[in-house]
Image 1: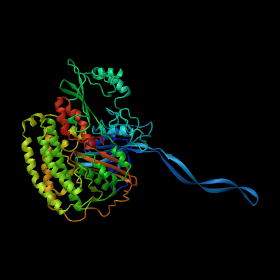
Image 2: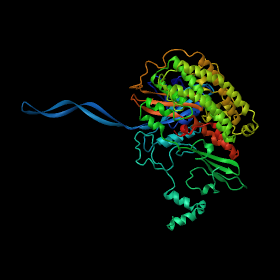
Image 3: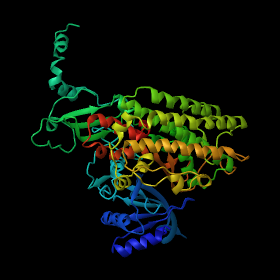
Image 4: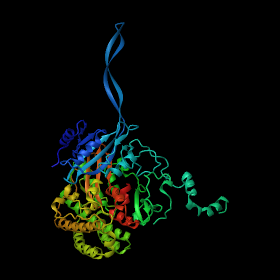
Length: 231
Length: 391
């Protein structure tokens, strides 16, 4: 029988001291709680989860990203303020309670979520997640592809669509979008380009490269016609 | 085969892949782009194959030709509005896609489908499995050069099943039938009778199919010992469905997850021994037989009653904040939906776990060392649909 997520957390902490695993509750009816791993110890924890005889999470089913943008939180705070008032013709300093609205920005992050199952023990799922420090420049997480190869294409997809860089991935390239594409379309703040029709077809430098290709010599006869204006 | 150009890999610009080392004392390597418009790729899909003579020494799949960011579109609309769009993932098996999505949302919102709806779901899912496996085998044989006959046998049976789908759901392929907490319409007694009659004829079809193929000399010669996948590697690479079971791993979500009402039916899980193409073919044929057994049991006693959970709301559907991962045994493998709700009418995160894409993780390993003609067969035995791979 599968242990509860709390028990798994205790088992990880007993096996890997200082793993720093955090319990993330799921308030919904599914109640699939998850474990938040620290990037620096994630690979060791993943290896333990796979190799431990009792847990034996040998099957990585699903890998995905989640984008949590920076949140602007508006709070109403009661504050004391000293104001000058004229009471009975004399200026006095009086303390007053005033309601102030304050805005603060809660920094967002990118999250990678992994769903683990055990084929050997037929239990699961165990949900583990990792979070990046921010959404702009510190977006590196350790790749779990060396532990479960099932993550290979899915981590590439998360890299492509969310922009999480998986350190240690053997072949981290874009998978669904083309190589020259710049943005990460699954992010919540992604703005669609105006030219939906753009595709990297043969024009500009691609065309030049194609013309320099040995196979293009065959087509050069018709090219000369075109250059000379004969159609 | 597409035309290849004899170029050394390091001369190709922008290839962005690890350099392939030529074996010593042999000729030049050949880079062949199989696809994106190649009959064997079953859609727009490309394999960049590196060949040493006829032998494959490298293969990189290239995806994305059919990418339309299904997930983003689903995150911008309501839960129910994505239901018809799930039909377009694996367009051969729209009903199992519907079920996987409905199951995930039911898990997220704490709904449950009534008895009768559960029976109808099982009947439709198993019919879907039979027509998918028959066509998958037909296409595999088509790739092998048996042009037409096995595929037409499969399609003849598929037509009968699609006729049933059309009678019940109004559409042959894009069924859009399941709802959160049940099914869209009820099956009439006449439809159930028609289904019983159709299922009664199915064993004959499988017998005929097997008589044509299972001991066929060419089929055996071309598939046995080709594209072998070892069980431990299959599990580690996240392979699922008939491919995983052909490698001998006993993992069928109908048995493991106990979703729906599969616990009530007697059926076996066919397993392969060698993990080669022939085993994948055989597992699919045997799964058709087991599906017929499930259908016979399910059609025997479909209980009366409603087909929708009265708690389920079609308008103003807002699941409580939380997340859920629902998965079912789709004909191609484990189809999962991962949803995060933030209490609004739209899902905050909507993710499809596509079995077709993840089963391709292992494609290169299976093809290495085989002839280029076998790549077509190995790829065909994975059974993918590009609508699901690229999403």
